[in-house]
Figure 1: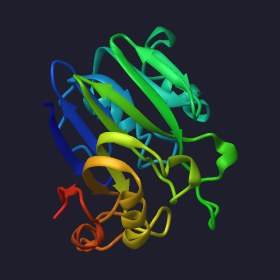
Figure 2: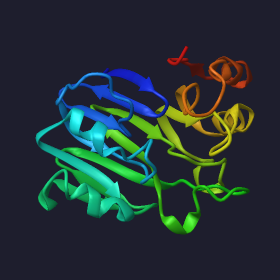
Figure 3: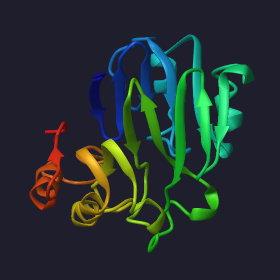
Length: 207
């Protein structure tokens, strides 16, 4: 299985025969090793041009939502850019993926009409679900995957209790809490989330 690094907050690196970053942010050292970069939406902690520059290399392909296209074209050519909307199937080279909805229900930070996304990425035989910045919305409660990354920090997304409710609904083997301990959410939220999740392995990678 590919190696997973939760670098901080919602910044994920998946390393196999290719290198995938999701929402690179607060990158400490330049690596310039990304084959693919997936960004869930255009907020600064998910689409950071400064951090993308630290991980992208010649030929890196970026997957992005529509309202970040203009800025993304300053980073890569249009041939290396794929603009996506929620609830669609896509393929980039040999990677099949689906976009999911990601939005808030009782707050206005991530409106549904913005068409921001989560991702279901099939990579080297493993299905990864990256929820993005979302509440526990109806469209994602029947997700099936091997590994799920779910935000738990509250304020802008689900809190750890709401996230645990979602984790208990979906069909996932492993669940990894994200989006806490830096901008929002207490550093202990990952462990609090873990205590409430039933029947699934929970890996707490932010301590």
